Length: 135
Image 1 (cartoon, rainbow, N blue to C red):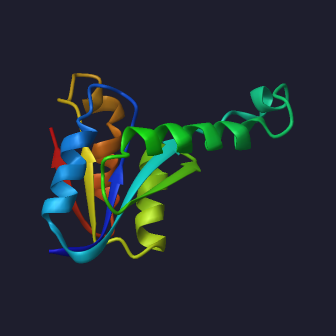
Image 2 (cartoon, one colour; image 1 turned 45 degrees about the horizontal axis):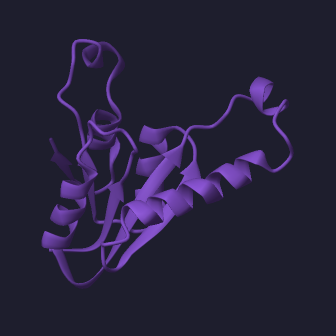
Image 3 (cartoon, one colour; image 1 turned 90 degrees about the horizontal axis):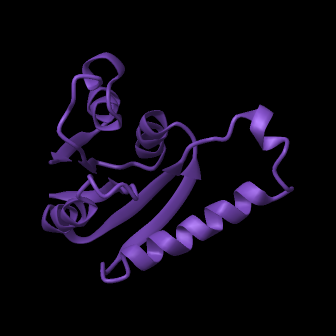
């Protein structure tokens, strides 16, 4: 059983985030911390310079509200939205926050994933803790 579980959430319908959250609850100890994390990809600086000031902060707030609404039926799940590269940011967040298990939803790997790799594959290879992959 785990005490601090991280569940990366994407808005991609091919990933089963609901099942990932169910598994997180199933493998958690009583009183465990479960965090739903969404990573917003950073906007390149050559694009960001054309955005209104504060636009990214506003986007993050909107995404937090959307994610909170998406998981509103999940009891005791914290919502966190941060910017960065998905695979690296998930692993870094887990390391910095004492996460002992990551439950990540994945798609069936396609041919392109063997060359580029998926976010779930990066997390599995580099996570500082146990990883449970949901397909």
